[in-house]
Image (tube, rainbow, N blue to C red; front, top):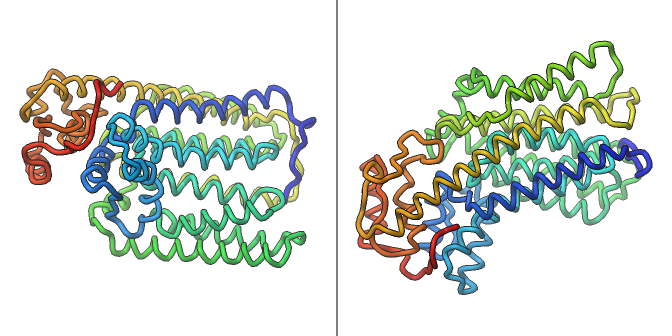
Length: 440
């Protein structure tokens, strides 16, 4: 594997940029948990089901490990006797947001002194910052686990703890998300190659890498089976219809950034290098304040699969670069600059969307606390049909959580979903929980 850089070989400006990246991830986590972003869209339905059951809500066997891990903070708190709704909804957000982000932070820490750091920042930017706002999706944990596994495989010496972490990620990924159908084979190849090429590895570590490769193959097989025989055929149809996403300007701009950054990160001195940087900066500017990836549930379902493909492209490029023969510099690279700007650009829109969601939930919370009978959303002061923050069908479940028990919810625009909610919660529910005051 490539030799890591020492402290003396790192430019001070680059160190500051790396610290900014860690601060950025910490800010996303803190703001996401405080704003209870886990309740966004389907997340409120998931939370309601956990509260009603006082336990896990597992509904998709091929994704069971991801669901158990992200729901564990809420379940453990409820079993410990915590009944404060404001605490529980933030624990849900920690499970859905904090745990995946901690895996990304681990990947960045492992690669901190190596050339791979900015590649993983690129991977984070084009996956989490494009499709990660929908925090209840199992793909967030799966993509983070894939990144951490790749960081270990591309890193320096694989000791006991790194090998144990790799095996843990491999086991987790066997039942996490269908994108493992193509990410699994990539990690399988990387594991086998590392076991073959690293002469310093002891026999036990080689055996561990082979076991990890086997688990990645199992993950690919289970994901393939889930795709062929999906729980919900609508999910398969959405994943197949990728052209609608590919044709979107947002995807095209992000794809251009992946290509430009991948080329610049090679740090190969050619005459057109500055041309690539200019192109990258232009598209960084175009992506600023862009929030089109969550414009509709349908669009989000499709883009999360595209985000997985972008992750595959970045990691496959890294695997290829790791065996290229030419040498490159170790100072601040133009690629690092472009990835830094791309991450900042996408983060601005991400934070903008998060604060907007927080304001919308705050308004809905005030309405929920005042009503004592069912009220259609169209009759409230926040009639947000078509809003980026209101996916509609989960309104009754969300307002039941915000009320913390008692009668009266805000009904959705769909009678179908209203009937389903009323069948689960007629006459009030969640009465065993407490919610003192507003959510913020």
